[in-house]
Amino acid sequence: MHFTEQELLAKIALFVWPFIRISSLFMAIPIFSARTTPVKFRLLISFLITWVVIPFIPPLPDVPLMSYAGVMVTIQQMAIGLASAFILQMVFAVLLVGGQSIAYSMGLGFASMVDPASGVQVPVVAQILVITGSLFFMSVNGHLLLIELLIESFKTLPIDVIGLTKADLWAIIIWSGQMFAGGVLLALPIMSVVLFVNVSFGVASKAAPQLQIFGVGFPITIMVGLVLIWILMPNVIEAFSIVLADGFQLIKQVLRV
Image (cartoon, rainbow, N blue to C red; front, side):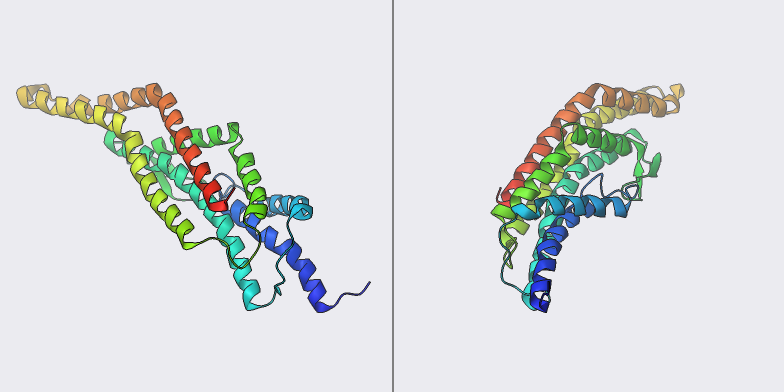
């Protein structure tokens, strides 16, 4: 069996373009994009999913792979996968921002460790919240839902030169800005109580300087913060589930699913 150059490139494009969309997602999605997850594993998962969904993909556009239009199609597939992953990254950023705000209000900003996902120093409190959110995400099969939405997007947002629009990108930018505000709101109850405790220590120290209240104020502040985290953890998870649902709703909007 002999193939011309155009026929061979068309068969390669049948696999390459879906693979780029799927692999772009797995290269940037939370949990899977962690440095502890080997790149070969992510590529293998992307390869297997692509191999399974190829028979169900609508016909590809009559665009040569090695052309300007083919490059634009490739960029669009990368943008679709990365946009979906970026939305979920912003969802987890809520926990990261909230955890950092809580840690600094408790005086635990110095207690930091290297985040295995990003390789940067983050407070331990933020790391605890991110790990808890990751476990919740996996327990509700969030990764499977995301894969399902991405596969459905091949029908609603077929492989073509035209993909994401400026309105889609603008919606993602606006929503990501709201997520940082959501992180502060997530930490606001604990920050308010810790602030009240610190103000109480200040008033007591002013009323009775001989008590040296600030000598015991720091460990009490930490203890109060840890107790509040333990008490309010179910509320944090509930708030995270709402943000996660909003994130998936935005992904559905962007992917036209």
